[in-house]
Image 1 (cartoon, rainbow, N blue to C red):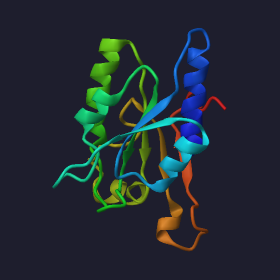
Image 2 (cartoon, rainbow, N blue to C red):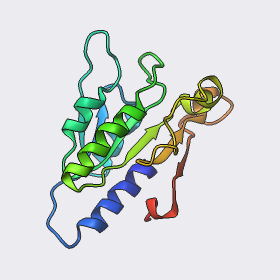
Image 3 (cartoon, one colour):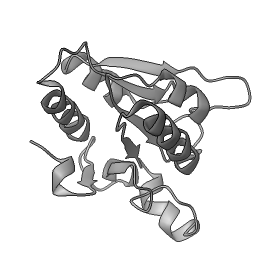
Image 4 (cartoon, one colour):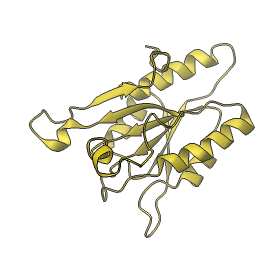
Length: 166
């Protein structure tokens, strides 16, 4: 929630000189419940990419198409609650980079690294999902998925101080 609030504040600061509509976040329909809570608590529209039979993660093509001038970020999950599958953050970055070039927008990516943030660097070191990708501005991991901490405990880190305007 803190990462998303930072995206909202950064978006609001950028839009102060011009009128803007309600901010939104694009995610897959396989998101954890905290995303729905964030959208409700902080008045951000949640745009969910619907899943389809045999493909249970966010489709990066559909996600990029849902992005508009009011999108504060696109959230990709590294370790879906449904099946543990990783979303293709690199492919999402490619489609968003192209859309950003065409529109002049600067839509960032947040990686909800849930459980995958702890395992991907070890099991798949060649997998590009993190700050190696320039549009990835923040990453969170969920310590509670591994036990020995309070339920809901997690951590978030940002690419740079400029990406955390609070």
